[in-house]
Structures are given as structure tokens and as C-alpha cells.
Length: 263
Image (cartoon, rainbow, N blue to C red; front, side, top):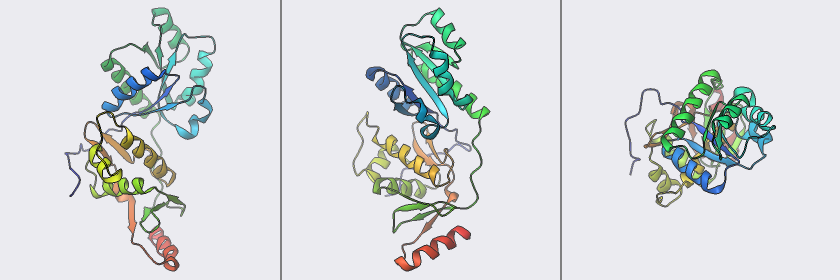
């Protein structure tokens, strides 16, 4: 059975990547559900883990929960922003005009109450995301294909670096590539890659796609190689970046892979 296909916009707009910092569990669950329903990819970071952001979260929108603002907030926002590569929105536990002004003066891209309406939160995240995308376009991908080796269930970068995939990650990638640029629903990816249907608040497919995207980036793909199509699922932005190599005997595998890379 082929994956469900949907109309694809001529130029799919990349979905925001959102990192939650310092959120209590109930607020994190609500924000994740609200933004996830609109196509954003949301993940959490341990409070105080800002030093890991350049590697784990090179660009995107950071939602910083603050209660209350304090003198070190400006320094923290500067660290979270990464020189402007990440937009920082402060969610105030105790909202007031003075607190909003203080947050903006501390360098935040936006400030709003943690109790703000869902639609306002989504709109503000999108607005900051648009500014980040315009100011920091991602570099062009290197020339050459990314090779899929079915026998080893792995990727080979244009430079010859191999990245292993789990069975679920490899199946998800094959399913997305089989769709040839059309969105594949989250439910179908769950059935194909995780071997089960999804329940209403199940985020396991989103986490699977997040891990797969990171490995694709490590293999030379753009961070936007897998896009989220709002309310439709996920799609491969450029299927032509991939070359599938048929299984080979061990002795011939290396030469075939290098031939594909040099073609």
C-alpha cells in the first residue's frame, strides 16, 4: 500500500524548530501540544544547558520561561541567542508591563505571558522564526549525493562518512523517499516505521523524525531536508539528494559506494 499523497505547495515553508528552556512540566506539555499541532518541532533542554546549544540547536526559536526576571537575564538571553542565530521569546510566569519592558531591554526578541492565548503564542513564534530565517539563511548543501546503503542500513555522505540508522529511522526515510516529495502522514509513518498506529497525543513519530533529521544533517543534508507540512505530515524537500545502493557482497561494497559518490 502506497503512502497517502497530498497536494504539495510549490515552495514548502520550513517549520519552526522550538527549544523550551526552564519550563515547568505542565507548561511544557501545553506549549509542545499547541506548537506541535501547528507543525513546529518542539524539544526541551535542561535548565542551564545553554552551552550545548551550538551543537544541538544551531538555529531556531528558544522559549525561555522566566519567573521572575533578574539581573543575569540579559547575559542568559545573549547566550541563548547565539549572536542572533536563535530567536529568544521570554514567557513570563508573572506578567506585567514592567516585566515585559525589562525582558525586551534585556535583549529578548519578544516577551509575553505564559498564560497567553494559544493563537497568540503560535503567531509570535512564527514571527520570530521568519526574522531568523531571513537574517540567517542556511548555507548551500555540498555537491554530491547522499548514498543509502540498504545492506548496512546506513547513510554515506558526499565525503564518504558513514552514519548508521536504526531500523525505524531507515524505514521512515525510505517511506518519505518513496513519496517523492509528497507529504506522508504521521499516522502512516507510525505504522510503517514503528509498526503501530498513533494515539492522539503520541509524539513518537516527531521524535523519530527529529533524530533522523540530525543524522541526515551529519551526512551533509540541509537542516530543511525534512519539512513539516502543516496538518499533513512530513516530506523530503529534495529527494534528488539521495542515491540508493543495492546490497552487495562485502568485498564489493566499498568500491560501489565510492563509485556512486564520484558519479
